[in-house]
Amino acid sequence: MRFRLLKLPWLLGLACAASAVCGRGQPEEPSATTPVEIAETERGERVALRAAGLVGTSLRRYHVSDDCSGLVRLAYQSVGVELLSQGRRPGENAASAMYRRAVHTGALHRHTPEPGDIVFFRETYDRNRDGRRNDGVTHVGVIESVASDGTVVFVHRGGKGVVRARMNLHHPERKGPGGEILNDFIRRAEGGKRARLTSELFAGYASASRL
Image 1 (spheres, rainbow, N blue to C red):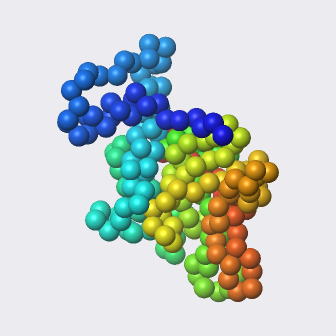
Image 2: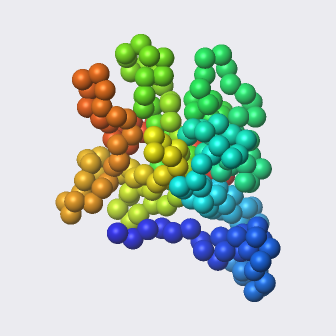
């Protein structure tokens, strides 16, 4: 399975700048890319890199909520974007507030995502505890990479902490023909209902370059 990896020269340059310990020169700038395109590409890569760097760590050390929205906010703060700058409406959760922002900015989409894009899921838990699937957008993550077969790898704060998960909308089943995981579980079984996969509860993406 081949992945469309992040542009490592750019990421290494960013890491060096952040740590101030690398002294081996700056990465070459691609001559065929305009300054605007460079800025947009760099934004998504930096967001993805920040999210990936949080895998296995605790969010409690940072000034964000220790949940899925806190992870995404922290990743975007690395590029100077506060996703909840417009606040939340009465009764609105942070994930749905981010979804509303994506709609307002024209960032919401359903085509192949790029590293750093946000991924939204709906009905991942019974938020209002009424026993019905009427909670709307309830979960978010950050895209890290996309494989050649369409499998998306994203970082999110789940029940086991900050982890990676997979989703493939072209092949919505749990496993592929070789037994490889294509879609992870995103909602546990409860109330006599089976667990749900990422492909089943997907609600959309938001472009990092437009948020």
